[in-house]
Length: 157
Image (tube, rainbow, N blue to C red; front, side, top):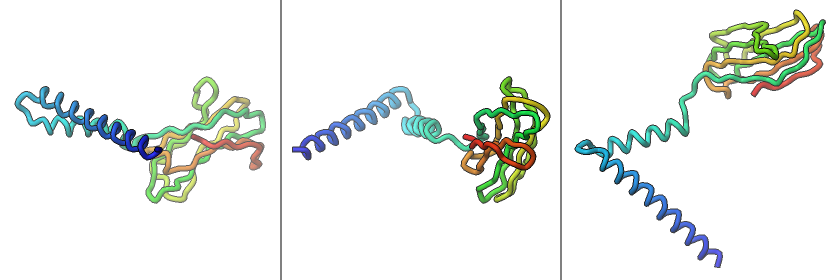
């Protein structure tokens, strides 16, 4: 009995897909008015694919906020895990959105690490990373602690 239900679902889904395609082709043919309707169909399909799978562009990663007290340093670390150089801007940002420290590396090499640090005064800070490609090309984090010791760390997303 289950196969009968599954078969009916597949037939319904196939019929619905066919109906959508006929509707798309029919409305496109009516709108074409002397033009090639397939050009309009291809244009619509390209627009749908671009919306579903956008081209990689600048990505912004951010950590959560942490308290940085007197004597602590906030470090924003970023590592290129891809096989190509990546442009990266690392920023320490306070709770009001003010950039407290910033570094830029227009060509962070594969396997290399960069980042920014802030140790001037008390703040609620987070790290932001602007990546000149996909966020999958880097691993980024924030660490807070006195001197060279890390007391807490957060991953950027």
